[in-house]
Length: 300
Image 1 (cartoon, rainbow, N blue to C red):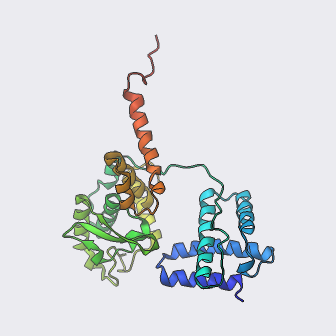
Image 2 (cartoon, rainbow, N blue to C red):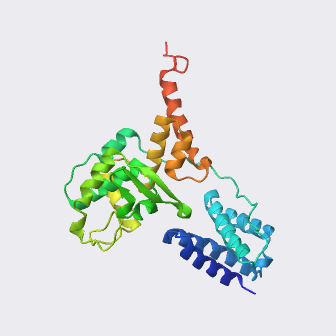
């Protein structure tokens, strides 16, 4: 008989080896499943086979009562589903107790974006320092192609196709997709590649640190914040802000929801649909400002 603690550890080892998830993602699974383990210890559920749907509902209710947001609970349920999916594959469980459970609905918050003028303001710098050249290439690529932070950091030199102007991206679940690279981003990346060897590369990563090693996520986030301040952007600039801005601007210009879904690497189109709300906000603002029946009457 395998204990729950043993099953969790084997599952974490499995996803680390087989699914090529980022260290941050695996750490998130570990935290979530530690909550499950604590809950089960409190309720004397040492064997995964004893865990039933009503136990998972109680766990979710407890976490919700303690202030966990809907998105956090969704991730917790996904972690538990993944664990039991693994145990079913191993022949150690016959049911997935978290399969049909949904978390309480939370308030849907729209992602923050920069408008086109703000994006131009952020990207409008000409600094010949090699690190600044690298940072501009990264910023341009984020906005050009809507990559996730982990996707960009995992890019290797062969993933960038200078001839066809695209990058091969490995996204969630180890799924690969080809994403176009815009003209400005191409120019910035090509300039960076001309300077890259100055850092004595110790990896084939497309973007490297000044020590020649693969960039760390926190380093990039810090650099983005600094560039936001330097360029006079009135909000915290971070990688996902550029991804959101890319999606919003693409949808606003094209109206092609399926195309934007494919570019972003979303498995479910409902994830992409949140950007339609942003687009509607923009259209509603234009309507209010321009439609004769929407304008407020001038006071007599």
